[in-house]
Length: 171
Image (cartoon, rainbow, N blue to C red; front, side, top):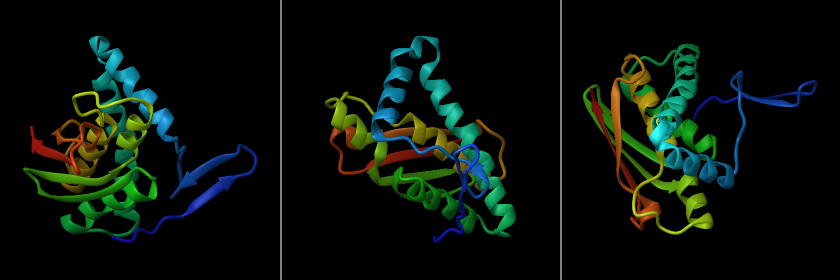
């Protein structure tokens, strides 16, 4: 789905905006280090904090886009998530689902590529940021509150799978 995206720059603050939302794109090194930090501090909720922070930050972007572009169908709304994911440079995503849940497949992943450039196969999926992103995507598309969906990465490029597969279930 082609999105209507306007990029702007504030010359006084040197801030970048995407459709009016302050946006900071981070390189794969940053995303890998952030993910590793969450894993290392999981005893203090690191993974949950990363996942929920991604969900809470991305959700307003979706809600605003639906409203400003008069999107009404679930199919249209669910198509916004893969569009923004690509525009943000996070990878290539295909989503399929309904209010009860669904699946998301990544054929490219900025997080996975970054991890593999810095470290070897961790023996487990590590794309927690995308789990939060997908939670926001499904909750927004189906008009549910935050934390309504459980997202599990069941296949992972960082583990050597050809694609990453996420399963989504309504809680």
